[in-house]
Amino acid sequence: TESWILMATGRTPTNIAVIKYWGKRDEALILPVNDSISVTLDPDHLSATTTVAVCPTFDRDRMWLNGKEIPLSGDRFQSCLREIRKLADDVEDEKKGIRIRKDDWQKLHVHIASYNNFPTAAGLASSAAGLACFVFTLANLMNVKEDCGKLSSIARQGSGSACRSMYGGFVKWTMGKDACGSDSIAVQLASESYWNDLVIIIAVVSSKQKETSSTTGMRDSVETSPLLQHRAQTVVPGRILQMEEAIRSRDFASFARLTCADSNQFHAVCLDTSPPIFYMNDTSHRIISLVERWNRSEGTPQAAYTFDAGPNAVLIAPNRKSAGLLLQRLLFCFPPPADNELSSYVMGDKSILH
Ligand code: PMV
Image (cartoon, rainbow, N blue to C red; front, side, top):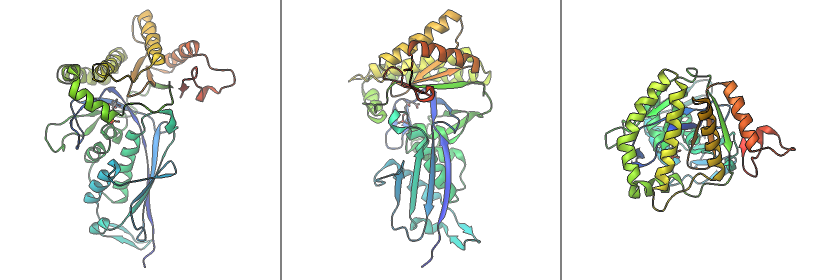
């Protein structure tokens, strides 16, 4: 029998939405009710690294997440794998004597190992980085020729927000119009070096897993929240244009106002849902007050905050100087215990600063 192994490895950071995606108009294809905009983090922090291997002796597709095998069947990873296989092309490696024909990919099985470089237990969104990395690395292994836009629409079918991690910098996920989702893709608005003065601080407020998954939460909001309809139809379209302009002109004051307002409206939609969803806790609210008070006392925004489907705060400062001042304020309100290292310190019982 033939014996060879072919591998590919990729690394993909997670992304943080500044205009949020919340609500699907098609659950199976993961088509959203509004456009969203995010910033992709730098790959040294909060990223997934995935290695995929193909070998003629593998008898089934298998996957390991942080060293532990997870079932692939019926999973969202499975639908991405199926889509990538359809686009696979010939691969030749003369040195290793490997020759894979397009159609062989239907019979060849893959082993996938993925690691997150941040504690999964910290309750930070990992699905965006994981799914985007999975799709990107498989596409490399299988010599898929499609562009990142097409790959983003495949990653979207694994986890909506994953499509935005297909690019660095500022990224917009356009909701699209057609029923099959071919135009519901990510586009890059600005590269990772465009606004690189920005500093992002993540304050881990709780390491508990979230109580309501984004899938359940979105479904409940779409079915019950009148505010969600208003937000998607009337508020977000204007905010998307304003946010694109703020990014284009590196206007931190507008960027911060829009980011905070959109996070707050997303959590208001959660409260407007039946049953109501509480993602933020008292510590999250204290962090919001701290930033709001500081911004108000200076007369212009010094920092922005945004919260996803959990209590952890993502704080954005315009430069290192403001980030330093923000950290001082945070540490004053949430003093670290003397014996803890600052880089991984738990606020009260509660938070880790990265
Ligand atoms: O892609 P999901 O299903 O993990 O949903 C993400 C939803 C939010 O993180 C709350 C908002 C966003 O746009 O990322």
